[in-house]
Amino acid sequence: MRILMPVDGSTFSKAALSFLASRSTLIESQPDVELLNVQYPVSSRVARGAGKELVQQHQASEANKVIKPALATLKRAGLRAQVRTGVGSPGEEVGRIAAEDAADLIVMGSHGHTGFKNLLFGSVTQAVLASCNTPLLVLRSDAVPKKDSLKIGIALDGSKYGVAAVRFVVEHRALFGAAPSLTLIHVVPDLLNLVVPGFFAGTPVPGFQPERVAEMQSAAFERAMAPARKLLQGTVLDVTEAQLNSNDPGDAIATYASKKKLDILAIGSHGQGAFLSTTLGSVATRVAARCRNALLLIQQK
Image 1 (cartoon, one colour):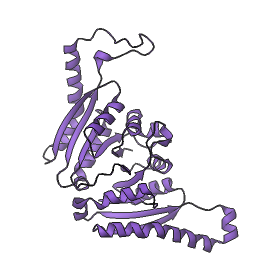
Image 2: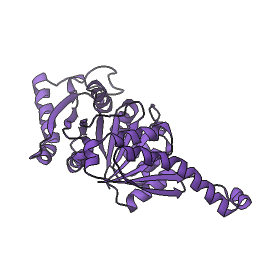
Image 3: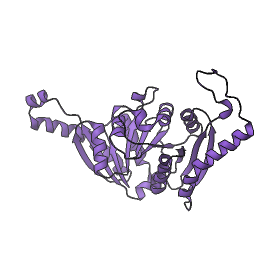
Image 4: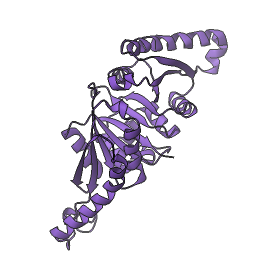
């Protein structure tokens, strides 16, 4: 497995390092890890005044201050890593290098947790999401799973994006431990409490019988589960399924992930976009705003 890990010396970066150092099953598989530090460029005025050589020396020194302790952390855990440094916009550089190196996964720490879309993950993480299609694991510093075998939730919506998340977990199982547990999550609409906005405010839409609603919900759930079940045939993963009834799928998924204390919540998204809501989709954006769990974002071209 090829893992790209951007590091900047922050608390959030250290949380991501701590997570990787705790992956004993992954470490046994000897993954290909690359540590990356990107320094911001200096202005042309400063560069002219200080001189190109002095600027480069300073940037190299600052990068080394971050890279050296990060390498030591991984070495203590039994992980060997390559080192790469760069100069430029960090988010764009991470995305470019991930694509160039054909990385299987980017692992990053993030401070984001707010209802404002442009602050969900922090500017660097958002830039990474917008600049590449490499799967991205976003870790929050106060919710970093440390045990080897993890509890993984995968949000399925019946599309190919959710199936891609299942495929990633199957193909890179070592990342999740020796005996991970997997929960497939699908949200079906609560038709008995469906409201038409601006029509009868707060009044459910009439005409749905409970028995018929249950049949429709069950059929929708089965359609969403079928491709994932096919992918999981023959694996020895511990798999359960969860049907959630809600007209606010993002909130329902985030609440479930918190209640069940999932270590990682995997969400498929439709790929690159200039804005977070475009990149992830409205449901994933809502989950990101409400969820403190680590998020595995599987993007598709």
